[in-house]
Length: 269
Image (cartoon, rainbow, N blue to C red):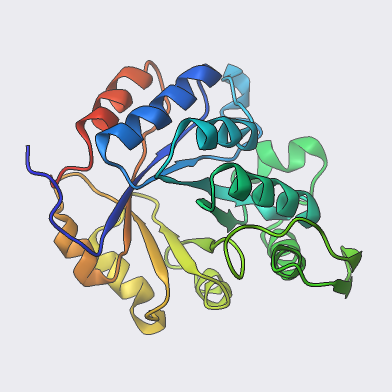
């Protein structure tokens, strides 16, 4: 086994919380022991609804994970802010930051799928509608997380207050914006925050990553890329990635194989 040798790169797992809740927490603890730098959770209300797959709340699980770990970054990849009240997300993220002693990260995006996670609950499911809600929600969320008095009167949210406590991280926990390649609006959105999470229809290769983020790349950004099997981490680093993320397709008896990969640690493949 060849351990990672890329000092600027960090490695994370992204767990679908679609199994026993305790098992999700156990996998997170195993990931920290195995040398991963981050543990993130998918954020969905449903997954393949006609099969009634179990889907647990990631925020409750992240609280447990924060108390059972000491080093890894913890957060969601990604939370559909377009179906959330931004002040509720602010309170959840602030609490997670305190529970984890300043290790919280928030990934945000439009959310998938429009049918099962939005329309099924009476939420706006159009791409444009979700994008407008996401942008306005981010504006409110950013101010609340910074401890500012937020006076906002928009088409969807009206806020005139501040929240306490503030997060431990200054000026607030990092916010990463997800986008499906080659869509450009997520890149324009991400430049206002701390990073980009590019998502391909299949796992992105380094040349695809470089082509997508290259014109927009900025030194202070986190570039959080999926990690395709067999591709050296150095190639992703050359393309601009700062994080590589392993996940899985949660179909069938997926937990044992994924757990085996997690316990093998972040290896160069």
